Image (cartoon, rainbow, N blue to C red; front, top):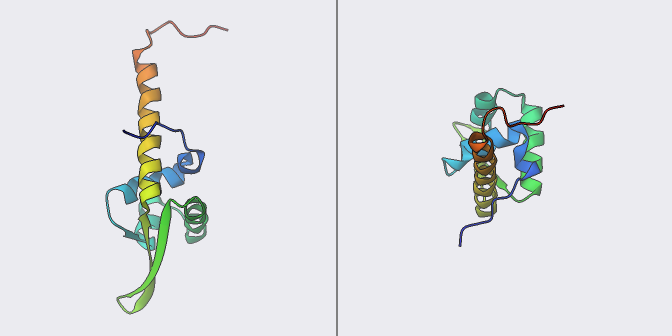
Length: 108
């Protein structure tokens, strides 16, 4: 049985949504790569990662790489399920608006 679509406020913030989207296509990614791809500072990325980690959606691993300590981030199984459910819910909501007849909206 597929997961029920769920709008997830932890994932929905634009920065966290971008992080999850990047990580959904890879096993893990280096901190600097994610920072550069979403265009935020180290501190902003750290805050987003902390929220995702507290929700159990990402796991951080520190390992030496090219002579320096680097942080690698990967989606957990729980994070992959939550991201897939969130995307499904966004698609469901988008389909509702796409199927509404034009000019049939609210008037005020």
